Image 1 (cartoon, rainbow, N blue to C red):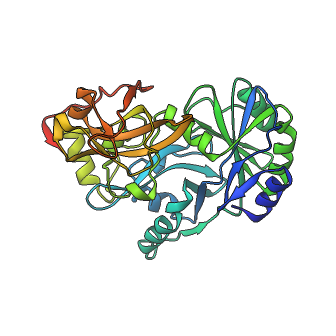
Image 2 (cartoon, rainbow, N blue to C red):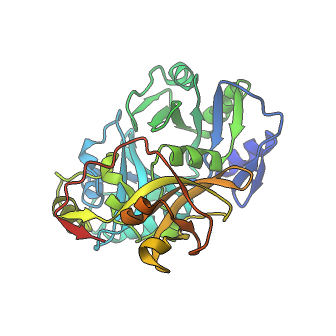
Image 3 (tube, rainbow, N blue to C red):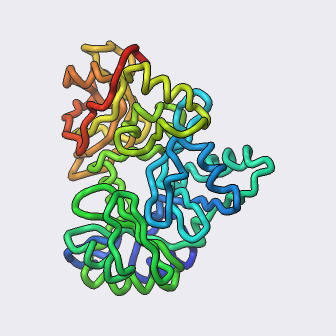
Length: 349
């Protein structure tokens, strides 16, 4: 967490543990918007005359399509097509920004730097250089318009004015991220908090779960090809771009294969689910794991909402268990998009 931003939030009464806001004051207020601390996220900045082409050749989505007004969901794979990271990618000025969980920033940055060679591109951790927070709620669009003068209309759309960037993210009600220099962002937070309820990083992660947008955390690195996490269904994969690490596997899965695992949304009572926790379905695979938790957040006393990648056949039994074969049973919830875009010919685990 940026030191100045941490000091500012602590002056607001925030309790911060291990670099994350755990609670805000109980009298933070009730309003028609919510403000979210995003300390769980880090930023990688890429600049240079070769930055666009370099990133385009590394990631699953077409970086050529990113403009000052439109970002995208994207991912980074190993040679076997397994995801090393998933992230939002957007452009501000002449710099590209990758936003991903802070726990994956160092390893992702190190790997990206390995392949720069003679390309004219610089890659650096920009997490402490830019302050940011989330805003959501029925009046979020109105406030964003008053701040930057325009509301991005599409998911991952961006607009920058007066040094502040607004990034629209999936979900209802409308939600955005605001990014800018520390002095301007602290002033904005102070201005908005009188009309807002203050929220923490887990609350923002819950909105990602409700929107069924996967976030890859360290426990799940190299566990999924993008299609298992539904990335091609929500604009995170381009099948018309050139080569990138893992492209042959991802393309073969798309054109010749049927993914046997998909990401689903569910609720569970008890069990304290965490990213990477195994799932079981005795009726389908006995004592063999059938999937893993992608992310989970509490929604009440001992109740959690989660995203999980698991065998489609196990989902169809409607008897999937958390953590062990006799663990808490998942209750599946609807997704805000369809899983019907697959055109299979052969099976792919």
